[in-house]
Structure formats: structure tokens, C-alpha cells
Image (cartoon, rainbow, N blue to C red; front, side):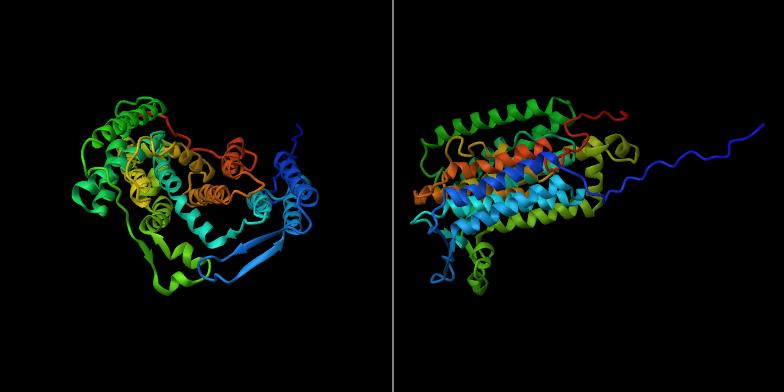
Length: 426
């Protein structure tokens, strides 16, 4: 009997480095780039200039650049990135090319917005303000990262902000010490998330519903207490922390005012980013945390107490969001007022998604939101911009929708995020 000795054909090997086409982002960036080119030649005046000033260190230095040329060049760069996606590029290059395209488009809008007489892009003040305004997004998103990497959805960041903002001012007034107020804000955030952790792990209540209820509870409690504090003198007075100036380092152009002339909240936020990143990706705790967020059954089989780890991770994450609440009052030298967080706790969740549940990505996302917020405020104050400040402030939310829709790569939450776990489950 003849035996067929021919072997089965080997499976095709997919070359990950082979160029691929990305139609949706390619078309989008191409059209946005062409829009900037049209604006440069059809809307911007031929003699218009955009002035960039170094307003804190080199006060006598400014650059006046031809607006139409710069906007057209940035539009061409945006369109070129889109065409590259349509023609084909390696998948690993999609994110950096998308980042370049988004940056070029936003810069094009900025140059157009600051092209009117009387408007000056005060680089150092705007960048320093952007870093400071990014802090609530940063603290809230970092708290969300720790929770969701552990497998628990933290919708209650808004409530934790409110509790931290209220308690920080109250403790500072009672003790007369602003730093005691900051600690009080952290404790308030911890206690708020402890309730979420208990209900999510022991009683396995729907985590989204619990988060919404805790937000409403915090809003009602702080609003009631605010009314009571108005009847008592000296319990809701504004406290502030000093600005830290690092001597000659603060005089370095651009970098000095941005990094070396800020309040302590800025430095704590930046340190937290790298500490949490190191703990998540370089320690045993981080490995276990990511395991219970991705595959709790596997972690359980290796001897990890899944629910206990989730409980303490979520509880300790409240220290971060509670401290973020103190930003609204102590960092801004404000007394507490009703609902003063204005929904930024929910925006922090968007920053967490843009950052793809990674502390370094969260930092980038928070800076984007902080920058557009600062620019919008600056344009509103100048009153002469052709681009409404609200439009620029809307851009980060559009970026969030793009990320969620998967146009520049899918944003995948941890696999077990929001899924209760019973020991022995598979």
C-alpha cells in the first residue's frame, strides 16, 4: 500500500512588520490636514502673524511667525500622516504617527487662534498653567488605574474628589495647618473608597451602580455640611500652600517656570506617576495586581487572595483621589462650595481610557486636557480669538471618542474589570 509521504503545507507566517492600511484614521487625518491648508490660504490674512512670547524669564524676547505659512505647513504634515496610513505603514508606527498628526492639527488651530491683533501665546505661563490644571485629571485617573488594574470599576472618583475637597478645608481650619488638611483629604478619600471596596468584593454589588450612588451620597453630604458650615465662623476659610521656587533653576527659559516654580501638588503628582508605574510593572505586588485584574482564577490558583488584594488596592487608591480633591480647595486657595468639582471626576475616567490604564499614558492624557483647558481660558480672557476657546477645550473629549472607537488602536480594559470573583471560579 502506497504511503503519502508529502507533508501538510506549513501555515502562512504573518509578517508583523509588513505595511498595513488604516482607512478610517487615514481618511480622517487627510481631511483634517486639508482643512488646515484651506484655512491657511482662504481664511488667514496674508499679513497675519502669530506671536510667541516668553513672558516669565525672557520678557524682552518674542517670535512673530507668519500664520498662513505655519498653518499650511502643519496642515500638510497632518495630511501626509493620513496619506501614509492610507498607503500603508507598519502597525507599530500607527500610534506615534497618529500622535504627530493630532499634535500638528492642534498646533495649527492654536496658531490660527492666536493670529488676531492683541493675542499673544504666552508660552511659559500657558505651559505652567497647563501642568497645574492637569492635576485633577491626573490624580483621579491614577486612582482609577489602580482600581481597574485590580478588577474593580471606580465610578465614584467624583464623590471622592468632593469628600477630599470638603474635608481638606475643614481639617485645615480646625487644626490651623494646611498640611493636616491635605492629610485629612486623603483619609476622606480612603474612607469613601473603602465602602466601594467592601461592597464590590464581599457583597459583590454592581460596581457601576455603587459608584453612582456613592457620588450622589458625597454630593448630598458635602452640600448639607456646607450649609451647616456657613452658620459657623472659621470652619470654611480658604487655605493655601506656598509656591516652591527652586532657586536659579526657576530662571531657565520655559523649563524653569513650568517645572521649578510650582506648588507641592505638582511634584507629588509627577512622583506618583512614576511610583505607580514602577510598582505596577516592576514589583511582585504589581504582577499580582495585574493578574487579579486580567485572570483572577489563575491568580487564585497561585495562592493570591483575589478579593483581599482587590479590597486593599481599591481602598488605598482612595488616598490618591482624596488628595486630588484637596487640589480644588487647598491648591487653588479656595473655600469649599457645593459641587465645586464640576464633574472632573468623570473626566478623569476619560483620561484613564486615553492613557490605556497605564500611568505614563495617563500623564500624557492629563497634560492634553490641562493644556486645552488653559488655552481656552487664555483665549477667553484675550477676547480676540477667531477660534472659540470652548472649541479647543472640546478637543480632548473628541480624542477620547476616537480612542474608545478604536480608530488609533483599541483601548482594552483589564479582562476581569468589573467582574466579581468567588474563590474557585474559573
